[in-house]
Image (tube, rainbow, N blue to C red; front, side, top):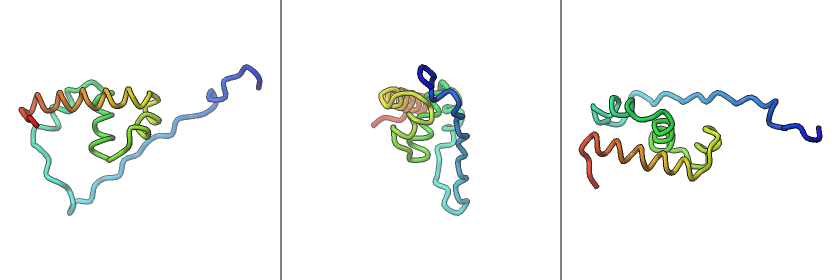
Length: 90
């Protein structure tokens, strides 16, 4: 096995997100879905996993096969775009 990429034979596991319980579904800004759809794919994925599902940057980085710094940038930029589009300020 010298010189071979040991990751070559590994398959990525499909991530399945659980549905939130109907009786505990939080209020969501009505325009959020359409604004989320407008984000670039990686930003949308990072924002949803971190803020929607409570994943850590490390967990998201592993699933998306990027660095934690990249996840951080995707989340920061994605949230900034969401706030701008929805007219939300801190």
